[in-house]
Image (cartoon, rainbow over all chains, first blue to last red; front, side):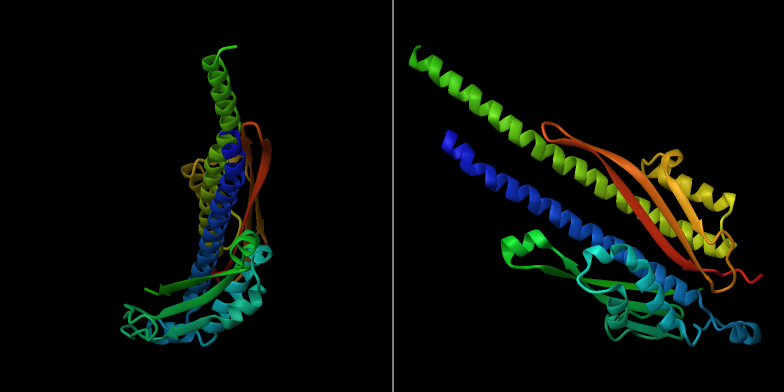
Length: 151
Length: 130
């Protein structure tokens, strides 16, 4: 019985560390989703002011895509210690699309947006040192998607 | 010593050993689960505060009140939170960063008691034309 107890100890500790690392991956992914949300909201609020003044129509500014990438990187920077790439590289590689008019269909998801929209999809490489030791998986990639519409 | 008394002693020893091992494991999962939950809630509150600060043009009592309410709703004492809004006044399309830091005490029986700093930060863009 004592032998069983001693043998079970590493197993229990392995499960504990695995649970904590899985939790850590999820929290990094959720924090990155918040970063993506801020980026798309900021970008879609970057309206073409001349068009707005002239016709009252909502239309994202011509630099909305750049604004989305820039703010995604800025908001990801707090997570840089957990990421396997720089925030700037992740933001640069992200698929950012500006849908200037209502009703346009997103080819990636098939969603039709009710208003002018900025959509961001990215792959987030998260460092997982324990999974590396246990499963030979040093990096876990999480898919992110965020879309914000103006109204 | 009889055989029955010896078995009972072994069982007591094994139970004690397992409690000493399993209790910290259980509490570690509970405490870190709570820490993760608080961290996410604090992040979301910080993001909302950054957006609001960008709308109203910077640091203001309304931004602080919104942040305090969001933190309180998440079970975080806002009076113990360190909040920084930089810059305090922001113009059209200028970046504004809201940073929040709180300390969470993590106590795991038979293992450790420590203070975990939870840091959140969000950057938004000024939307007020001055």
